[in-house]
Length: 232
Image (spheres, rainbow, N blue to C red):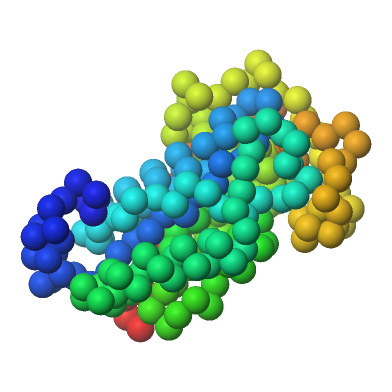
């Protein structure tokens, strides 16, 4: 159920029985040589749609830009907005919706830049953040224990959700231990790492079967988070 497909009167009638709104937040970001720039948008929109089906809660139009790693700036197509701009954008749109009767806003994202997450956090008592990728991976993946970037996990999810957009023949693996990548992750080093391909992890091991397991696990997690928010 999508807010943008409805008339204003449809939305007014929705508000007579439900006061919650899901707001997907994506980003336009490189994902190595094998995944599209809108990977996080496609993923978060899928999860928002499924959560809407499971709960009957309406989905707002996606915010397609987020906060990205400065070290990705020269990778063609990638673009981002500032921390303050993302916060102000969300505060602005939710302020209008709040005045119409919406009482709870669920920001759903599939993008792990720490400043992106921080920008979505602690905005208002009625705005809640769910990071869709916050699940267990260790029992599913072969060479990773967590979600990285354009990695075994993320590529497996992409193979399950939209296989026609995944170029497995173009995979160029690259990895940096987390401790060494922290300076890039926390925007302290804005240069590209040496020999960087945009990928962090082992996408060559990705499979559709792993993706199905992870997607179902994420949906269970989202529903659990949603129920917790609704009960507050």
